[in-house]
Image 1: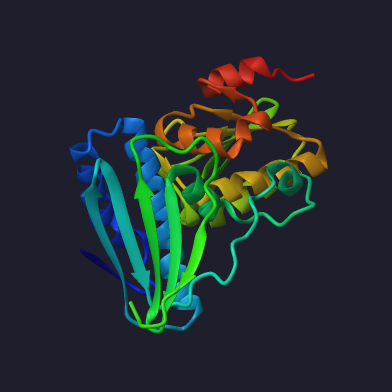
Image 2: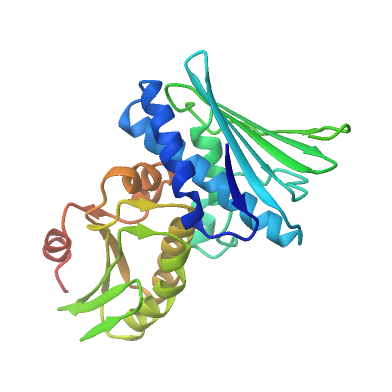
Length: 152
Length: 118
């Protein structure tokens, strides 16, 4: 388990990323797939740090990863409230032509590289559950938002 | 002429500005890219080369920064190309679809040769 302070810097992710790379290697993921997994998790940690700060929460972000049936499972818990809705997939053409604000690429990359994306909100914060199979899904997955009334 | 931000190294080369990024191209670099790009766009250059030769890692902040440069360059009629994209940055840029909006070259020299001044 890795702990990162809310409001932390991306340099705090390094040990988490190193641990996760080792797990991907144990799963015999290709180098490209390892890069995809690490990219998605880096984005998820950045969101957790940012959202925890935005919601003016204190505490830490916890990341737990494990292997299950050849897949890498990563849970990231933060004390923030998490997303209340899932933003649509960003439109690159619209952003380049100024019709859409430049935003949304973090969650997009998570959706591109994780096989499952589940947000669970509870009284003490929110958790993002990610599952990574041996290859990326053919198209961005649809995230699932759930609510856990009894806490994390 | 050289503009050297903390994280982005910019140099004028003929008809182009070459903006070179460091090993990690994330939020720390994003804030330094905007002034470097603005300087390039305010000049008479017709091309901006985004040099990824040294970049080993990028993320959504890096992607957002590139999209922002493409948007501002398009408004002013300046071409933008990518050079030296490989490894993890290539995976990300490909997935986002940026190669459909900015031509990619193996090296900065190839980018400059392939886009000679009018």
